[in-house]
Image (cartoon, rainbow, N blue to C red; front, side, top):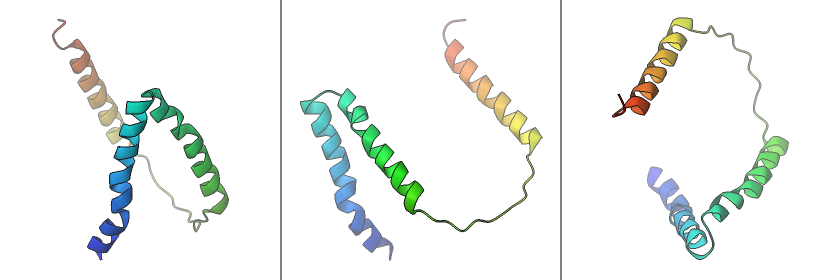
Length: 87
């Protein structure tokens, strides 16, 4: 049930921001990033060693028109945002 899953993750949902606020309030905001590097490395190694997913081969085609359209659209938005108020 969805409610049970939410209640199961509730301590982490509340505890994470509280711990982050404690670290940045009592130490420095850089510690919030520095402390996550070793944790992320441990998680990455753990997943690499223990996670086994079934391998499936799929053939896929790249939509070149959509790729080009997305690239041009993102560039236009970034340029418009960076030039806003300067020209």
